[in-house]
Image (cartoon, rainbow, N blue to C red; front, top):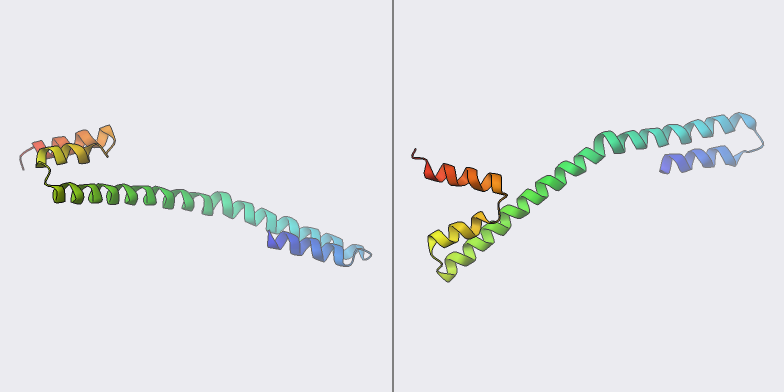
Length: 104
């Protein structure tokens, strides 16, 4: 956005000189293009990945806090296990149950 504004300033600063209009317009369009490409190809996917990681980390912390509070209150371990499994999506819940049931 800053590059676009700079290009427009270059273009309009010497509006009488027609040779500077093309240079200013080129800077404005080129910086807009680069900004859009960075946004869509680099920064957008990066934001999505960081949001996914944040969501995953928040879920883990919520499970940990709930587990610690339940242990502190003296809940039965089987009830605690079911309570904590409720935080997980059904597919992961079944995978955890199968992993716990299979002898190693």
